[in-house]
Length: 617
Image 1 (spheres, one colour):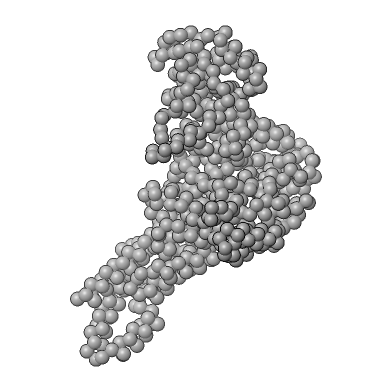
Image 2 (cartoon, rainbow, N blue to C red):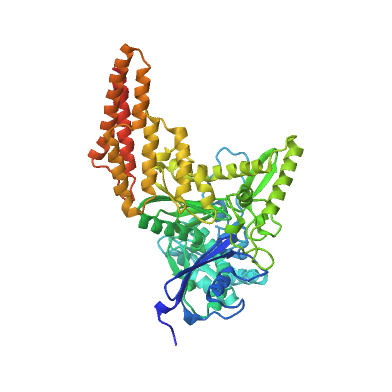
């Protein structure tokens, strides 16, 4: 008997390069979570399936009861990693005669205009063969399809072990008869993966259509094997995957070309939904995992790109506009040529960082362990032979001691191991800050109007540092939304103390505290509380500030005392008027909006200008 949907489990899974996170909704409505290494061959074959079994309370090899599961929705990096590491299927490219080099030539664009050494990306197809045929742009058949020659080329490739073929013929996007016939010949020859351009990318432009078709043929077999294995283990339960464009699709329709940013796309969709619940409508997504960091921009609508370059491969598919950098918790640390270097290589999940008890290299994660920012007691105990031990802090300390010795041998000076870890961490954080600049400041967006939404396993460790202040934004104006807001506010307050330039720093700091205090409240109370604290400033300068100025005036000679007193009173009055103007203009704080911050800033600037003008007179 099949259970009703409300009495069944739901699973939402993110399979990353280092960790796999599983969130489950129990039949009673309660949420459960589980985190495990994506690659741990001694314990399980697949992390996602093992996570489902653990939450269901099943043994390692027990069958998963499909009747107990309503749906499994997953984002995966299987295809992404295959493309990055060039581990896709061996692929044959079939093109119209005379166009065998068209994809290799591409658009003749030089990515580095002034570089004297041009390194062309390697092609992902193994072999290219020409088909004798030609159709004109108006559909006229200029040369009939040579089926005998096509069969021969397909037979040769199949005999050499190639099982994937990409078929791209001139004007095939519109006049499909020849492509359909070649696909039939390929099926008859025994090819298991057949990607046809008029189905994969039915748009004009031969190069981009061909590139996308090749990517689909190259990645789909790898993806299909993984999807089929998961679907078989689920025994008929509904299985859906996140696509690069941010939408879900059924497992049977999941294609290689749509899977490149499956995991990161789910991240930005979730970040937007979370921030909108809290009242934020402009965000910069900051997703830092174990292998890479993905940053994204959102201002009311999802940004998508259609012609993209991923891992040196051109594609024309709708994907989320996400900028990725090879800087994550697993980025490997090296000291070479008298320099600290972080990444781009990653330790992944196997062997992983040095603290994972698998003999891995030092990584960014180990820096946080060394500096006490990662506590073994608060990290998942999924390490060791039985996958039940915490991270190994002793191995990390020994690793940095050895690295400090290497630095001493090269430079003659021995730094403290903690100082070495701090140096590597600063480099990693600078890379992350530059990534945020690339999708915001360098595209003309003012980050002071945005919320920095931090997520991912490693994001919370690095957000309070220069990542949040990676641009030259005024910290008062940068709203930060994170589950650790208190610590972030303290970091921002410390930065504010060094960058404040108002006439009265004490008032500026006190006003900032009001902002941070308001931001710590629930969304529905934030606007009212901040509005009340802003209006409180209309009463005049703070008592401590007034007392300090009065003491200063008493130390002046009589003539100067009167002048100074009148000037200070005039400046105070103008500052109060400026602050009040921000409220009277109707620009007070609103829940989930930065308008109050901007209004307060405008009022302070107006007050400073008037105060300076009064002193000048």
